[in-house]
Amino acid sequence: MRVTIRQIAEESGVSRGTVDRVLNNRGKVRPEVEERVRKVAEELGYKPNLLGRALIKMKENIKIGVILQDTGTPYLKTLSDGIKKAKGEVEDFGGTVIVKAVDYGNVEQTLAAMNKLKEAGIKGLVLMPINDKRVLQKIDQFTEEYGISVVTVNADVEDTKRICFVGQNSVQSGRAAAGLMHDILREEEGTIAVISGIETNTSLSDRIYGFCDDMKKISPKTEILDTKYCFEDDLIAAHLTESILNRYEDLSAIYITCHGEKGVCDTLRKHKKMKKVTIIACDLSRQNYRYLKNGDIKYLIGQDGRYQGYEAVMTLYRLLFNDEPPKKEHKYTDIIVKTKYNI
Image (cartoon, rainbow, N blue to C red; front, top):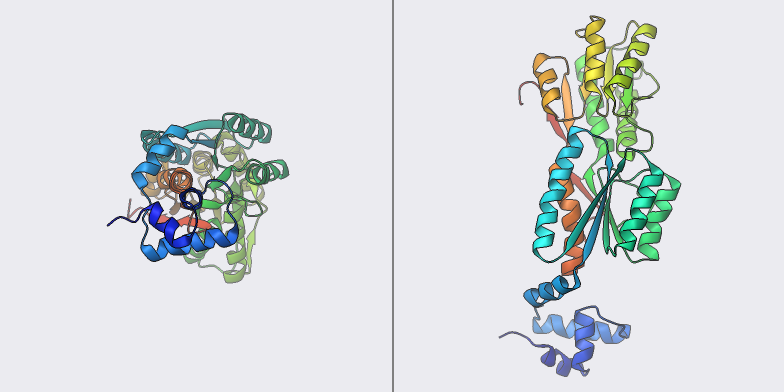
């Protein structure tokens, strides 16, 4: 037989209104009373009416905002696909998901988008963040002042009040790249270039840290050049590769943490260095699969962007619709390693 609020009220010695406020998190109840009511409800085996709760939430039209950095990369496409799928499911239950894109690394646009979404009445925000002091402060303000729960996706900013992160363990991804690079080169000495996107993307900076830290341990005589930034642009990546080759004729390898692989590969081919320079890259794209199959890229280290986008939105859905907080602070997704033999 289903346990009723009336039964819980009688056992707890409080009114049915008090039980309703406790079980549905409505209004303030003294801590000792709340504890007693919840204990009685648990002992009686009370199960919430999920259908009734869903109907209530549908009437509230809970809104979730999403802000993505528009990198124009294949990864962003898969991330957006996952968000689109989650958006459909949330809106089937009467919620709203509002997606906004900002220029890659643009702090002002990110802050403006956050303010617009707050004005639109969002209760939760999925954010592909920028590691900038103003953005970090805005995340804390959303949580502490406005009561808006924030989930970060792809890149994390741990020193904030965000409730959780959904994405790859980027430090570990960098370490995986270092191990693979060492196994390929098998040299006591060598020179490795690192090309990344932008400095304010913590996912990319974490990859660099993991890679450099492990390479220094397992191959201490290897020289790792200062990181160059291509802003996920093939033309800039090509120019950087050209400059590196002109200065370091004995270049052993390139680790590219972001989009820009075409620029790197085209330049190495132009200089007839493709077979002399090992490349490890990160994007799981059709283009990179072709490079992998041809032997131009030795390894791809990828991630499931579609799942990340979907799970980031659904984490907020479960919190806002079902009062179910995330069980983990970090929802790490798999580190996917591809070679020409498993594509």
